Each structure stands twice: as structure tokens, then as C-alpha cells.
Image (cartoon, rainbow, N blue to C red; front, side):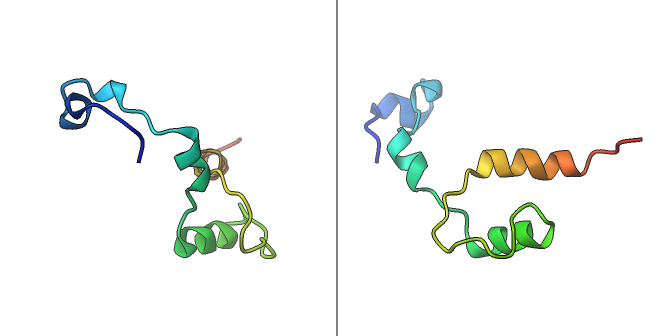
Length: 70
């Protein structure tokens, strides 16, 4: 867990609490999220089991796919 002062965790300075890149790089969305993104065509069906996934970029692509384009 990243080191943070007690004040930042309790909300006194909540903006001071930022996760480290190490913790973010280990995050992996659950299998249901991955399955839905494959169903919607955001991920390919043959996505490797341990592929690196950026959930922020994935959501940007997903929400962009829902925008109406005349």
C-alpha cells in the first residue's frame, strides 16, 4: 500500500493521496469486465490471459464507441 499520512486518508487533504505507479500497473479488471469488452468489440476474442489492460483507455474507447456520428 502506498505510504500516506493519516490526514490524507481521513479526508483532511484527500488530494495528497495518490496511488503509486507500481500499484496501478498491477491492477487488472475482473473477468466479467473483460468478457463484456470482448462482447462489445473493444477487445479481441483471442486476448491473452495475462495481457496488460489499461482500464482508463479501455473505457475511453468504449464510451467513444457509443457516441452518435451522423
